[in-house]
Length: 87
Image (cartoon, rainbow, N blue to C red):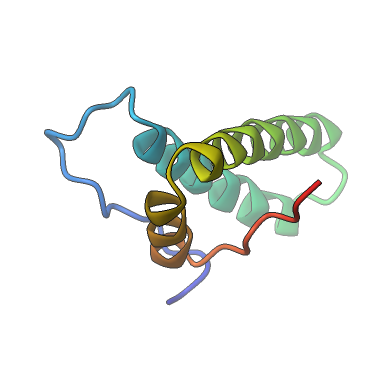
């Protein structure tokens, strides 16, 4: 799977408040900001925004891993992201 490709795995009638939908939308934003920062290395405000979105996604993923390990594993394999480190 190409890293810069935007993901549209979740259908339109999916609940937009669900953890999976929010993680997918954060992942799309992260990939878009990452490709932006490859060209604009000194855009520090975008770097800050990227770090904030990464933190939000990390918190959502840790919540999902505590609630449902199966849904968590399925989501990270779909999105092709690394599993979070246990604290």
